[in-house]
Length: 337
Image 1 (cartoon, rainbow, N blue to C red):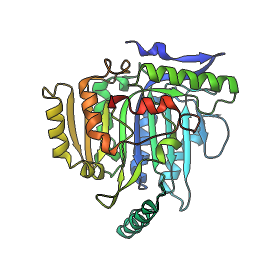
Image 2 (image 1 turned 45 degrees about the vertical axis):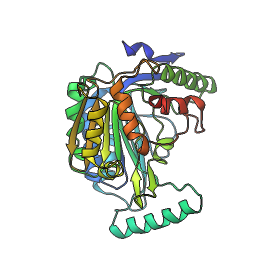
Image 3 (image 1 turned 135 degrees about the vertical axis):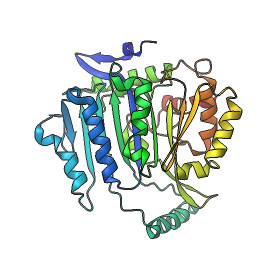
Image 4 (image 1 turned 120 degrees about the vertical axis):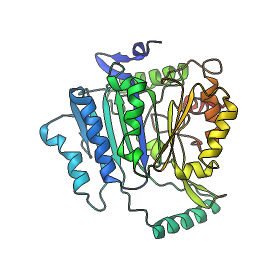
């Protein structure tokens, strides 16, 4: 289907925009990989990005030569105790199909001592009935539907060639079609219209991802009582899912996952796996699809991957307004039916 028609605007402002998205989560600094992600994304999008919202500033400012040096400066001269945020877009107001987001948390180096201390603390808190969380860094780039990298045969090698995927220990990642939305729109009426369109469109086409950094980043890491470890979780099944070594171990290992996929999808026409330095990439389907409502619109291969990933899937996320919403729960669990 032509998903470009899913775009929604009001009073000349783009409120939702279909795109192809790549998202990575990190729980260690990995500055060289962050810079590689930024530079490759920035080069790919070129003049499609015109404005940036950075750090604690309100509203988007026009992209300047000085603003272009911001992320490289962060990466080459990291400051202890400092988190960073930048959101590049192709619109002064609202959203666009071309975006680049770097929400970089304050992440210490994961030394064995730090990992042991965190794990022990988390174990105690879970035993006390609390739900602790550790924030991760999130990197996301979205391409317009007519961009060369929106083509799956171009997108897949681009993702697999990212330094964070080829060489570094990411926490989680995924890629597929998505619906960008204007998170910081100021008008109450436009905000309500945007949230309604996002809910309706993603319910009708559950293959579309949607993204709000806060609701995702707080829930990725979880304590696995059976393994006695902190394990990264996945958002849900998508066209391409990046599983870290730690997540794979919680699922029984890469070989176990491949065997489970082979049993669930005997013909293996729509499924492929790609080993990476610190995990495994799993592709389901020849190309990203928005999909039709469940159950008839979800391919068997996507549903099979969802069943395998269920033990490490996020149990819940908040809606775009920052609170739980029924449609979000339905969207998150749509492959369970």
